[in-house]
Image 1 (spheres, rainbow, N blue to C red):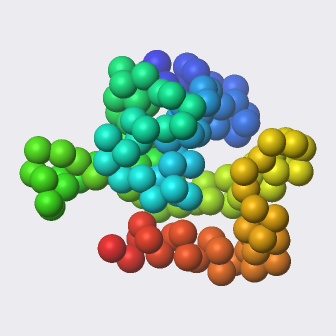
Image 2 (spheres, rainbow, N blue to C red):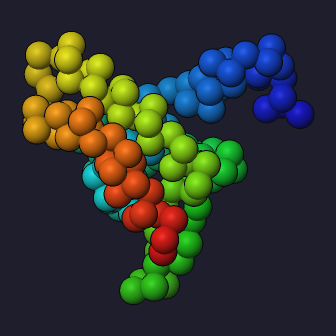
Length: 137
């Protein structure tokens, strides 16, 4: 019920912002999508310095929203792996556009020009490559 109230306007931008209303949710998805981080410990090493309580909360929110899934780590049964779901993978094009825009306007970007070129010239292959890491396993 509370989730429905947050985006009751029917606006898709409001709905999306309710889901990703803070930078941490976006950065967690970024780390899963582009940096191949899978475990809580790897995600906690976010270069932006996420607090562990915020990380735990956002992981629960993203899982509840169907953006990520959590599964037991086969190599360490006491820990979990996180991965994007099909719904989460549908965010790849949006993240690519954010990356392109940020690289264009951030003078301190650490994204290589070659990667931006690849994203813009071979968009579908780039999307397929990322999707395959999550949906074919």
